[in-house]
Amino acid sequence: MGIIRKTNVDYYDLLSFWGDEKDNDCCAWHGVHCNNSTGQVIQLSLWDIHWNIPFWSGIINDESLFLSAYEEFEQLDLSLNASLFLPFEELQQLDLSNNIFSDLNGFDVFLNLQKLEELVLESNNCDNRILSFMGDLKSLKMLDLSGNYLEGSLPEFSK
Image (cartoon, rainbow, N blue to C red; front, side):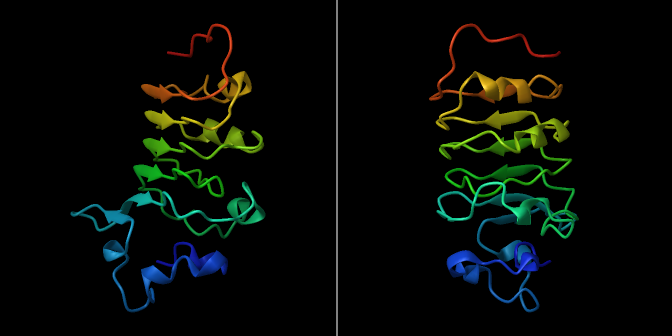
């Protein structure tokens, strides 16, 4: 599968707990969950790993992106990891809470997540500018922006 290993980037040897991809079933790896019927990865939990990779770094937009071929993801939890975001077309749930983003560069990727139903951006120091990335998410049913710096009334999102 070569999820993150394909990028040849393993900051601080954080992926060693996944073992050798040639000898292991990735569905048994820590934080990786697969569909029992198809065996495809549907959820990746990378919370509280404390990676120190520049947010939206070049490895994220690379054509050979480690997960670009995995369109079956349904849930991605990146709590406490402001270093990584992946634009999965089939993604339904995304938790980016507690990342305390320093800027909003790259948030236009949200516009590609047309099947996104739940988005958690709790406690990220976001201001009203974050709202401009949410309006076109027609499938969005739940948006958590608590713990941010929003002011005034919120705009009505597309229905």
